[in-house]
Image 1 (cartoon, rainbow, N blue to C red):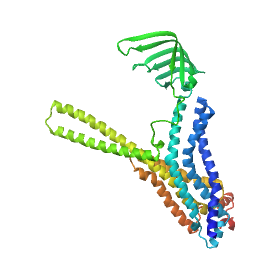
Image 2 (cartoon, rainbow, N blue to C red; image 1 turned 180 degrees about the horizontal axis):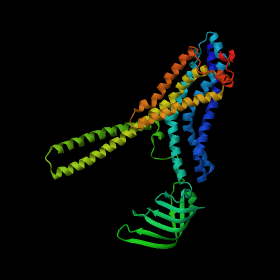
Image 3 (cartoon, rainbow, N blue to C red; image 1 turned 90 degrees about the horizontal axis):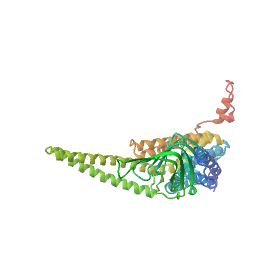
Image 4 (tube, helix red, strand yellow; image 1 turned 180 degrees about the vertical axis):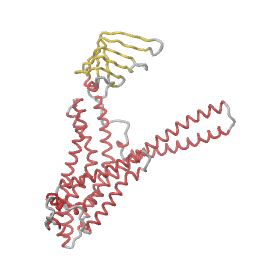
Length: 444
């Protein structure tokens, strides 16, 4: 009965630190996101509804990172406080092994890992897809803000250049119009004004005192030059009112588990098909090389050589795409499994650092998680370049940190102390007292 009470007590000690850590870490990531988007929000003058959608859809991928880190912080904090308050000493004095009471904590960690697997494979890809489509929508929102002075700005089938843009008043305007013919129509004007129409779904540029250069599509030899006092360019259907939840193309980070598996299988099948095609083309080239030289053979060899190069290039492209898909597939599992590993690391760290300060817990957790994330990102880049298999690149961090966790657990079982922060703080504050000895309560 006592064991069950202590097990529930240990689990309960994690709840408040986990919630606080999750809020703090997510808030820090959110602030970083705000800084990234602040210029865009001000420049586009986005309404509050779109800003809320933007940050709401950004929140899930922040949680994918903040939840594992919050687990690590909460574990270090909970066991560190129990050690500082001598609760772990009391348990050991009663003949209780603290590691024998961690079953409820590990069960919760397993459940949270399963939840994160579902979250990363099904919920997160959908929100990433919606976020991408919303970003596209924002790019077309109030497009006149995108027309920068002395810069070429492409909007739909038009490329706009202006030497000056002040309050939507343009000076020395140059427009390439590709909306009507395959030959761009060039429009130049001394001044112009940008107007937004149809609730932002259309853009109107009213030009003054200019000329238009146009090449006849049917008779390429003919060239027309027209001057005008006033001319209006209408850019319609900017897709501002599009449904940001819909979209056809999905990148690997926007694919659910089923879509990833299906896409991986399709890429493998296409690679097998290309491999057979390359083998067949190579055999045909070898036969032509062994036959008597002739003009027909030379033409055929050139044709087969071009086909072989195209097939080889496509095979390389498929290989790169396949690696990216496999990396994303394993990354979602590895990042979810990190929760269990961080619990195993956090327990001995909390017991061995002997501190209940949230600042220290955050500092240690930040260093560990930063190393883990750098290793994960580095492995992803190595896998994308074909220098490491996708499975190894994504799981090597978990394997290394699991070994580290087992070593730390072994040291904590044998009463080893990683860092005595209270003693370190005392020695730093009494650095000038060379002969001074630390109090016993700090040493033991």
